Amino acid sequence: GAGVSQSPRYKVAKRGQDVALRCDPISGHVSLFWYQQALGQGPEFLTYFQNEAQLDKSGLPSDRFFAERPEGSVSTLKIQRTQQEDSAVYLCASRLAGGNEQFFGPGTRLTVL
Amino acid sequence: KNQVEQSPQSLIILEGKNCTLQCNYTVSPFSNLRWYKQDTGRGPVSLTIMTFSENTKSNGRYTATLDADTKQSSLHITASQLSDSASYICVVTVTNTGNQFYFGTGTSLTVIP
Image (cartoon, rainbow over all chains, first blue to last red; front, side, top):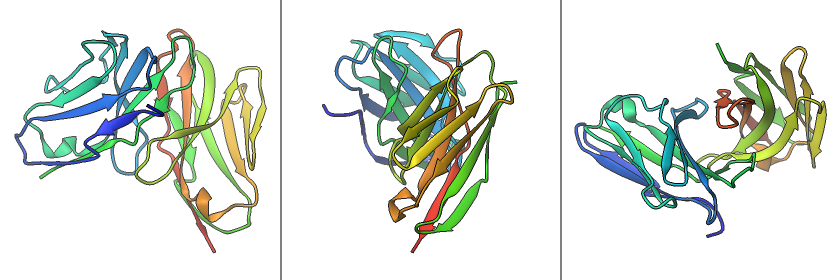
């Protein structure tokens, strides 16, 4: 595709529900990043993949957060037993191997009631 | 502690006027600094990137400066347009991994007619 796409664009969940957010990176981009952006804040790093390998997950706020990229392309960020503090925009970005620019998707706005 | 701070937090200017946004960082070791523009409901889009040896970079009406000694950067917008209304985020990359990105909280710019 022409850019990074994310789905759904908006998600409303009741507290305690599990959610899955999808990211389709730019074709051929090796690196994939997930970020959490609270209202009025800059994005905060969650996790990073190089191909299918999750090389850094230091930003995941709790063990309720899980990300995977089994075939090295599409990635899913799963949040179990959602809490109100999980409400945020979740951004995905991809990058070419050796590149220094990340290309961001439009984000998924998650609202936990 | 690696931090990126931006000022002002928000700014309102008249169409056609110039403005300057500030970014101070304590990130080390420094690799590069990017300015991103984030429209409401969209992912960030890169405007400029500067490495340690560069002290100015232009992209149309956007001019970024970098003082690596004082660890300060600025983004100057000339002859502002209504479409410049967005959040502007400063992002600093750490040298050793190339995968650690530190985001500022952004400056929200509103251009009014």
